[in-house]
Length: 142
Ligand code: RB5
Image (cartoon, rainbow, N blue to C red; front, side):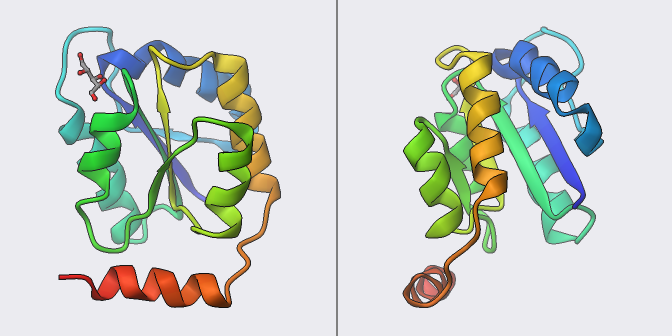
């Protein structure tokens, strides 16, 4: 599984910690590469583009709260970006939503919680069935 990761300045430190912890996943880092101020939509687009072109299967995005970058990513058809604010949500984001982008808040979440939620998500399976019907309806939304 090829995974990409990106953050704005609000997620820069947390991104470094995630990359270090998951070194075995060979995360492709799409920026930002310094703590200088940036615009989160630019980083959402980089990750979305990698997924929609098939360059990556899966993405991680971080901004200060995780909210702005979630909004930006979810504007794109085929993207299911989930803000993992609890362990239970990490489970359900895979089981029910088959999320293809995980989102975190660099200023609102602790690194150990984030790392545990990524592990929980990766260990789960998408349930399909009634959930697939709902995901299909999202793609039909105009
Ligand atoms: C940047 O200051 C901040 O607004 C951004 O990281 C994010 O929290 C937006 O939702």
